[in-house]
Image (cartoon, rainbow, N blue to C red; front, side, top):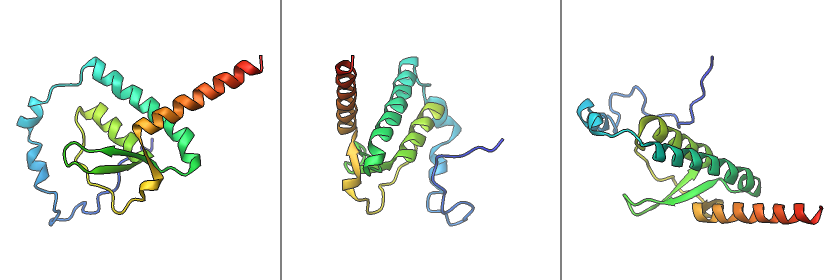
Length: 138
């Protein structure tokens, strides 16, 4: 069986001078033991977000949107996530119980990304328009 990873390739994989090598020390078994597993409610919320993300992508990607922009509380910068990367990050959170270290995208075009709230409103509007159209045909 061939597995496909949604994670971007590590450009420093196998490099002894990897600038992120010290980050592995932060993930000691001791630190991981302190992590509480996700609650059933948290898991359900992540699964719902994955479902929402699939709907958003279906509606917005054909219109030229590459993904979502998220305001990061940790660094107070907007982070631009392509559809696949965001889905991969949510799956990682679901599997590992924590988020990955993240880097802001290099020179993204903000016009190609929308906020989660915008995507939600667009999806809600598309649903309402579809329901109204369906009611008109009855």
